[in-house]
Length: 428
View (cartoon, rainbow, N blue to C red):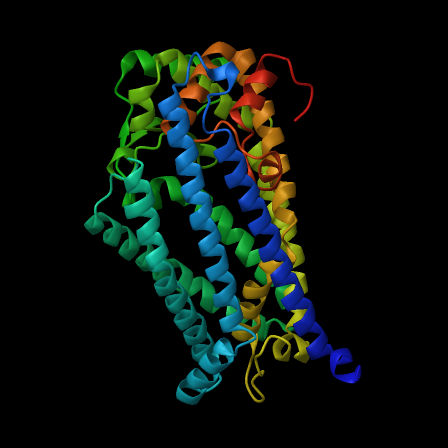
């Protein structure tokens, strides 16, 4: 009676199913806590914010958070169902068999397998994208995009995926088949090179496909920004305003690019909302990330994780039980690189749940460090007022559940950030 379970294939099926159910249960528990906590604190603005945040804005943030969290639960459940459909219920195996019957088992068949899989998943996600944009964001007054613009963005993304992702995919699959047992090292190198190249070309070649970027025309603000950059020892290619308002009412500012391609980008919605002093403080916060080398640290961490992931994929792709345990029969005469790659992508989220909280914790710590830098180089008072305006404008709840924060939040809650800036908290 124990023999079927002891079979590596059956054992892996059991482990995967258990991990999937555990992952779903944990995230549902966290989401339920978040909804309950936000609803319980909906009736009153936290005392420390009572003189700056109105009750209407506080309740809007609570309702927006609850709506997004509940929608996220639906997406999560659907995602698990789709994963099961592709794996244990045989969807990917059926697709692979259909393609090999039509295309054989060569490189083009492998590209077709990944291409059709990606297309099907994209179509499955369309209703969720539409609902999130035209129902949730629309209901709370954030959506500024039109259906035509939404379709144009979808088409541009698909075109970029084909023109850039297609050749990259061909190269990766060719390396997997031609580079021998150490293919995963070579493939990892190609993947890292692609990511570095993407970071260099994104600001000037890709981002303008989706938004207009105009040089910052406010002479007084430009002078302030330049003075701050010089004071902090930084240079940038230029200062730009992005027409974020054509899609959303959310506001933001960011650095992008590396080296000579580095530039500062302000959303037009941010400039319309913040004073010059507050913009100065927000920019100082972003400079803090560069001063502490946060971007570099994150990139190195992701590169290290991806190396471990490629090494694991290199081993799993040689194990028959990895395929059969996930409901797929490996090709008897042809390559199984594309099949292994897709199965790996489908199952890894179930086994890497706790990597996310580690990165979230690290990101929150970096935010505290960037805040401290901004206080030194600019004004803590203006940074705090800017943060509160952004929290209000983006309808970010001021009362999130602590466990939900620990697991998901890349930025600390407003109360923690302002207390830390004031020196009243000693740790996150």
